Image (cartoon, rainbow, N blue to C red):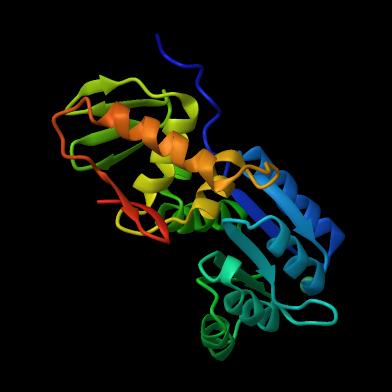
Length: 234
Ligand code: CA
């Protein structure tokens, strides 16, 4: 019997735009595309929001009241929580020098207003393929392991490994970044959500269950414990 399938990971986009009408159009369009959205009308609100609920992608307007988009971008890059968050800068200025400046501030991509919404959505997806493959792909593979993200099933050499929903999400978080160490806190945020106040021990218990399930395959044990740091996929 298969465990009930939890919903596919919903990518989270923070929209930073001071024009209410433009902000609303973005929010509506991105939600219609299946993204979870939060909005901020200025840079300070954006920094607070990003610290509270780290987005996968930030769509950042260049011209904002008080603190400019490029300055917000620099501050986001200095903060450990948003160092790796994808930032797409929107600007009304079309000069090439601005484009270069936009990328020098640490933005990953840059679009000139008026921009096409389908193109913006395509660029958000392209950033997500890089940083959160599970959010945009139908399956993830690593060695003999294959995760079907639509059906929430895992296979090793095409033999199914039954996993509970929590173990599935744990494996998904690890397989997205093979080799990279994820701390117990990062795993708690990713798998259980920011609002859950659970201890690191919870992670260890579910990692043990995941290892046990994976040990029933011929493949070598793929999860490595990194002392004092967390877990990584070999
Ligand atoms: Ca603006």
